[in-house]
Image 1: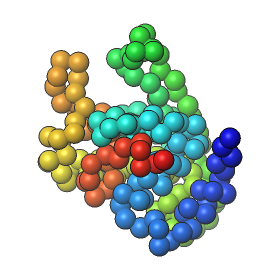
Image 2: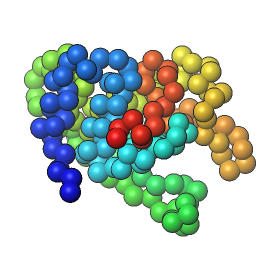
Image 3: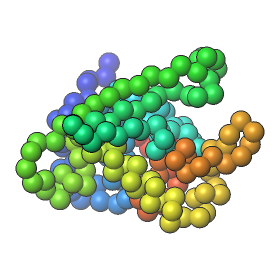
Length: 169
């Protein structure tokens, strides 16, 4: 029996300042926040290897009239258990309170919109900075070509390899 994982747990993780400070730890906290809000399994969020997991192209951001993020979950190519490649879309609005945010809240938001936005921004930065990232551990199309950075697994802002779901266990 597993007890439920609550927003209070996320808050406690965020407030452990000494434990969430490296780019990889920040990435893992943000992906955990996105996973919690969107009810994602760890293999859907960051994948079982560095070629799998969410990519920037799976997020759609709307900022007017309200900040909303939609994530598309599933495979465009189909899988062993979903040969017709059904996609599921889930949407959340920004849940930040009005007013000034602390530095910690800016870096480690407890909001699906803000966490997803920062994940995508950091990943885009990582792919721009790291030419090696474009060549190793890349997702390939059906015809064996390397997919664009937007379709690659999300990466921490320091350009390190995408994380694997085993690190969340």
